[in-house]
Image (cartoon, rainbow over all chains, first blue to last red; front, side, top):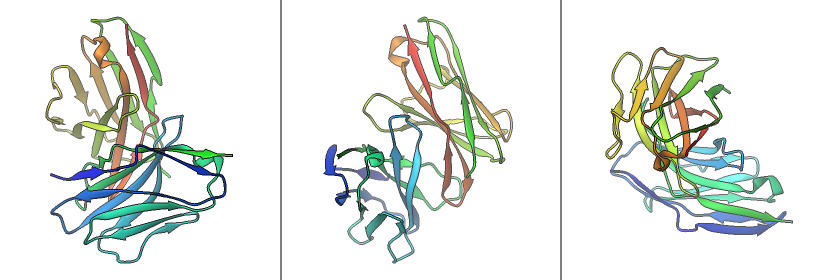
Length: 115
Length: 114
């Protein structure tokens, strides 16, 4: 069975600063996807970034980037130039590379951006 | 991106009554969808996987007779909470998958059972 762990229940960062959220996972699969989802107070799930495990290059999306270490089963999210709108719950998630498989979520990290 | 709607967005009901939650994909068709439950300050926990035209597969610990899923078409799925109790109060989220690792989440339904 796959598991996703986020060891930081809460974090805070000053506006315009950089913050890194940690995530580790456990799987015996070779091919899979990893995601970071953002859940703001509205509770709508928003995809932040996605990584295919077969790709060595770390995914980036504007101010968001990941550090994907496949051997270590680590998948951290770096948010640069933090903005007040980044305040939200962040979930690390795993999905087997089966076309219609389920997503397994980590426990989440509550991020607060301080003005 | 694809749009998924849920109705109602919030519902309050009395203990012992049944509540139906609808989940629609508005601009795409998909055979597989998922229902999640999220308690306050917790993560999303998968309740069941549903494929159009077949019975839903429930996760361990989820009562299939209590949480009825009807995957009526490629764009509509319903979750009925039967004989709801206060402990069923939660945030219910549906998601459709179009394959290839892409999931489209609904906005969620907040259920409060008094």
